[in-house]
Image (cartoon, rainbow, N blue to C red):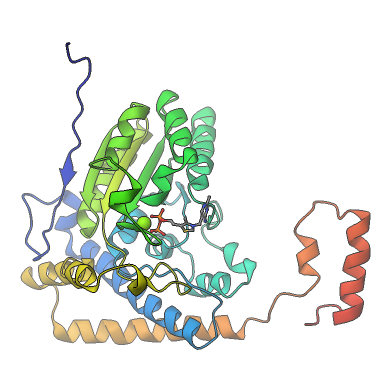
Length: 359
Ligand SMILES: Cc1ncc(C[n+]2csc(CCOP(=O)(O)OP(=O)(O)O)c2C)c(N)n1
Ligand SMILES: [Mg+2]
């Protein structure tokens, strides 16, 4: 038998877990201001995350999907994109969305059960959060197809979890993107768990990046706790896509340090020593170490940053808590272009019961 095809999956790391550079860093990383911008947002995202969990625990948020440990994967993704690119997220990539302009209070509104949070003011052209696993890949492929047909130099970026890559929608989107060379970048945020399902029983693949091979597109694995590597790999993939060379699949290796959501208790199915070990590789430690080594960071700057982050988060929480709830009749107003007759009666009944705009 002869070999008819051969495949390789490259792996990229730019800054190791101790904060030491691995070879020459990409050019954007030569600008310490740019690194600080990413580090500050990663820190803000973490402070936000802790606060959101506390809000849920004190009954002020419905449920919440934590992003603890994913900060580099998410911020790196947001930082690599151009403003007019389109992002189709799943449900925990706040770091990417904050970079793109989504407000913290919008995230809180959404998880507080208010769909107006899902209608972010900026960026208007990004997709809403997508809880049906993997469907966001199809939405992104659709957006990428539109860009291609219109001849626009824009790309669609979408993200998915390790569990999501077992879904049909993921393969369908990759397949069409590959065969029609769509300007699409798919990011698999492999945090090793899909609720209580560990990676080793999710797939027999050695890497999730190699799922690109079946679609005829490049697949790359990166250290997803290394914000420089994530941004670099996605920037390169976006350049390829913008130049008409088609899609790329990037697997970012990270770890879900939190429960799946606040409705979950991971201690029932996950060993604590695994979590303790993963903390050694979390993304903020290495960035801080690197920034300290190049003289761009110290303890004083760190405490000032944390105080600033807490202030910003508190302001967002206040804005969220001060937002009046949606009116009862609004549940009728956004479902149909024209309200069916039967619903009109129900809407009138709701208004009569609660009073217009009442609660
Ligand atoms: C189509 C579909 N099936 C099942 C679910 C229930 N569900 C919500 S999150 C989740 C696990 C997703 O795991 P992964 O893709 O690894 O993403 P992570 O939450 O780890 O970031 C499942 C099965 C869903 N939301 N949609
Ligand atoms: Mg997962």
